[in-house]
Image (tube, rainbow, N blue to C red; front, top):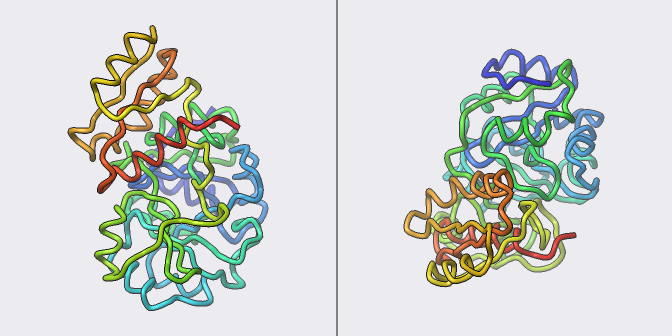
Length: 306
């Protein structure tokens, strides 16, 4: 089994030989491969158990690489990424001929972002752009530490080909915000590390909420789910009542510190599974700031399982 490492040289060698690397980002850990290598990209899907039609996000070293991966960058998108990159923002744009069908699931658009983690940025700069979803089995709770990746994927990774790059705990803890610039007006497809209010402020324009079929990561109704059921409530008082009625349940409530709620959300859901909780009773935060992303993840975690 793999041992997580901080050695970027090992990660560079793995990418160069067509392996996969679990990468730390400011949001969650990703499972990355050379975005121009079809066989390496297909291994991501096999390792995760991810359906082939679900698109991946291409992680760039900087905004200068944007024009290589898309055939059209609207002025609003260019202005937004100039302010938000590196950071937890993904933009959906028309794909260029460089982008593989394996990366986009055959779609005409591609998700692009520049992550804000020094180890991963060094890796991309020394290799090439990396395609990556979250580094966990498909549909389950996203990983925010290298230990989470090892627990989920250790039996599926090849110690002779692959690497888990350990960059510590992810400081934001929820995935990137996805903004679709292939539609007019642009749509926020997934709430994430850049709150919708901040996206609108940076753009100086309004945005639409997501509509239409799933076309980006994290848009399924059921996702980010622990093994045990998740029950959603609006107040701590309701949570305490429900907890008394459900032996073995755990209450999740950090509504007084939204940043900490986001940072520890996935580790808390994992801890509930590790402790064989009968149920997670989660108090929904207000729909503001990072609360949008937390609510989205909890609603998907509580949805009927596929």
